[in-house]
Image (tube, rainbow, N blue to C red; front, side):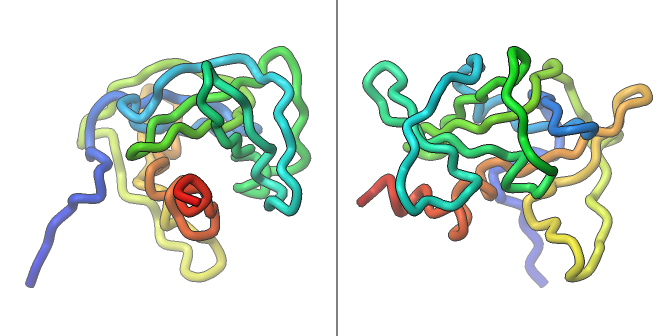
Length: 160
């Protein structure tokens, strides 16, 4: 009977919160390199729809993923509030497009609850749990597991 949780995501800690549509999400603040406004990206032929393209960030080519498209949250709109969160995942720099960044919050194990099981109708493998802060419900995402998943093809593309 082996039980270990070494997924790289802490059960408690500081999380950057951001919005996608009407929902609020949180990711481990230690994975965030910087936050920038949404700029034009260079499209890559034959890439999945959720990969918007790449940007040149101070000499580093950074793939940009639109989480609204990845999570099937409707047609994205890009405006002055749209931001890109630049992430450091392993040895790779990646960006995710979100509707807006809220703030940095502290979640303890007391206000972080396990994600509910929905069976096969909803894929919750990237959801660490649900955090509650005052009257807010925050969906905590394991951003490293999401960004390194096989369907993202970002890690393989980085080494090619």
